Image (cartoon, rainbow, N blue to C red; front, side, top):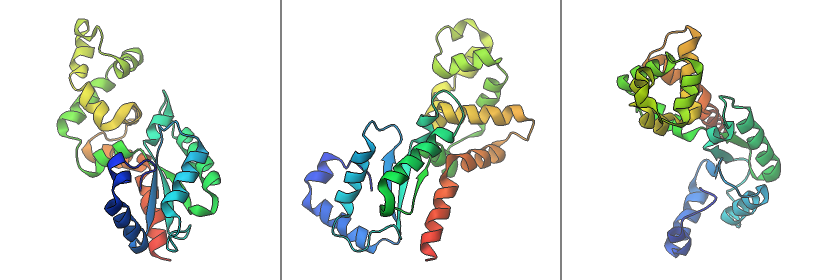
Length: 212
């Protein structure tokens, strides 16, 4: 369930009815809130209450808040703490309406869980990792002038695809793994990105509901 349904959904009585039935039948309810949203916390609370009002089935026993696009809260670093702090703040606001609010880097989780990262993507990340820090950072934000630098030019060819799959946060995490000296291949990269995407914690929370 998203905090901001589309206008078509809002105007469709049948859509609202189907949603109400789904809420009543669901084992677990996931309430998605975009990490890049500009709405106040109170807006999220009111949206949650509107969607679940009158449903005896919806409660903290089976409802989980999901802070999607949480990687966008990492700003210019590869730090997950801002996302954790934002999720904790929302959990305080939502109170007894949810059992937890879990931050998830949804773009990264989707890419690694669908096998979207290819061998070519891995090679492109390796080229990126070979750049000196200043060049790496420049490429994260722009390809301007890259044609004048053969090393940047080679890495820049796959820039748009990698950012679409992983975002800046995910690319930074991949480069950290490449720098670490640990094995750097599709399996280890996918495992590391999955661990840091938050999807594992979300699955753990869902599993806990199903065991209740």
